[in-house]
Structures are given as C-alpha cells and as structure tokens.
Length: 343
Image (tube, rainbow, N blue to C red; front, side, top):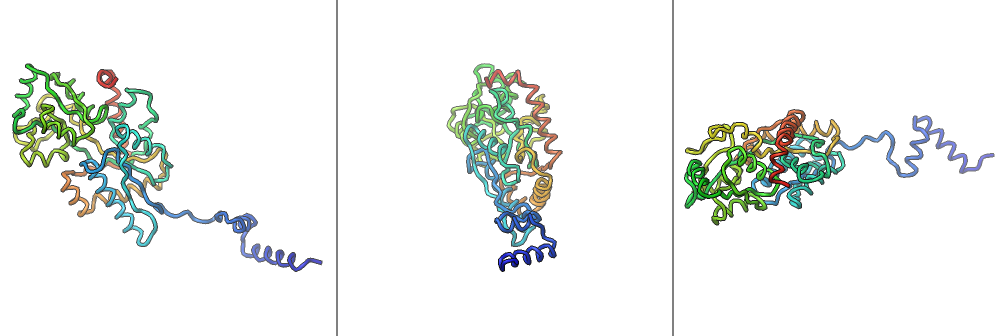
C-alpha cells in the first residue's frame, strides 16, 4: 500500500503528464533554474554603455553624447514601458584611448557595450605588438566624418598657406599635432610627407591643448577639426589656411586638392565609427541599425548636432565596414613612412 506522501507525488506526476510538462521542467521548477521554454528578454533589456576614447567636454565627446542620448530616446519610444534601452556614455582616456578600444573589443558580444572608434588606431600595429585585432570589431555604423583644418593665430600668425610655405624655407614650422600616434598626428604626418614642408610636429593631449598652444604662440599652426575650431574662427582668433577636404567654405583657404594633394582628403578626416565587440549577433546588429537610422531621421537630434557644427553622413553595417577596411589598407600601405615617426 502506498503512503499518503507517495500517493500525493503520484497524483502530481500524473497531473503534470496530462499538462504536457516533462520531468526536466519539474526539475527546473524545483531547483529554481529557468524554464527551458522561457523566452529571453528582447534586446535591449538593460542599460547600454557607450564608451568614448577622449575626455569629456570636447567636440568629439559632445557629439557622442548627443547621439547616445537620442539612441536611448529611440529605444524608449519603440518599447513604451519596457525595461532597458538607456544609453550612458563613459569616457576612457587612458593610454590615448587604448583602454576604451580594448574594453569594447573584449566586452561580451551582447550589444550592451558599444563605442566610438577612429581607424587611425590601426597604427598601434606599427608601434608594437597589438593587444587585439581591431579589424575584427563589429562595425555598426559611420556617424560621419569631421573635416580637419590647418589654422593659424589670426592676430600674429600666417595670413595664408603661401605665406606659411615661404616662411618654412627660412625656419622650420611648428605644428600642433595632438596625441602621439592617433588620428591628428597621423594626418599631420601624411600632410608633412606629401607637401615636403619643413615642419616640426609637436604632440599635445588633445584638440583643446592644440588650440591653447596656438593661442599662446607655442606653435605656428595647428590641425583642428571644424567642430573644435569653429568658435575660435568666428571669434576672430584663428584664421583658416587650408581645408583638408574637396570643398572649402572659408574664403582664401584652399582645399587640399587645390594644393595638389587630393589623395589626402579622405584619410586625414576624423572618421567617426561606432563599433561593438566581434561576433555581435545579427538580431542585435539589426536592432541597433534600425534605431540609429531613426536617430539620424529625428529633426530634434539633427538640430542638436547642427549646433555642434556636425553634419551626419551615416553608413551602416557592411558599408561602414567596407570604408573601415579601405582606410586600414591605406594605413598599411604607408606603414614604412609612418614608422619613421612612430617608432
């Protein structure tokens, strides 16, 4: 004869069998493990961290924060009352941004860690054994490209590119070139080698320090993006000597093509990619891409970016990766030249 306890257990098993629930489900329920058929929460169900490889407050940082904030807004609007989707920015400036790039690369490929990336970082392959292969990132998008300018101090500096070139024949020009081995510095190296102008490239921690050095008279010229120099140009502090692009909006300032070096227009720009860790799942990539497209179709976001003097020119997914690989190949081709400066 079965005991009362045994009878109860038999009835329970019979009931579960009738309901179509197998023994593994009983085990899961009894041990607190997740049910085998439980559906995972839709992405994003948590907060997303957007890593920025520069310090807070500059043009690069403000553009990233603006886009990140609006990305979070799109996630929230797409899932009313849903959990997750907040996007917070985190600045990691250590080792010239290397920590930021490494953190993104080694993050769990779940879409909760993404960030900014500049393809000029590939030059770390020249200066030493790289910690990781940055060609393996998941390239989510290109936000757009920032054009770099060559500027002088308007009060007591060169009045034109021609005047600068003439002066360089008498004395080497000092140019502020920002972080060693990073985008600004690489662009300055390419410019110096192409033009053969006698220049001493002087490194500073960032764009703000570049600008301050020019104001103090520590250098003769500086390379800055349009965003980081616009206020000083409009205030009459800086004069534009040349534009590293195919077109120029500055009277009297020639384009790099007009100076005879059109091949420098693309590789000297600050290319603003957004990347994730390698092997990001397709559904996560598709969700991020869809919401990035909404961000750059949002009039309020575009107005905010316009105030920062940034005009988005987005490329998504495979198109962004194609451009990144093209730039990687360009830097690889110029490895012997870059080694002269970076080793």
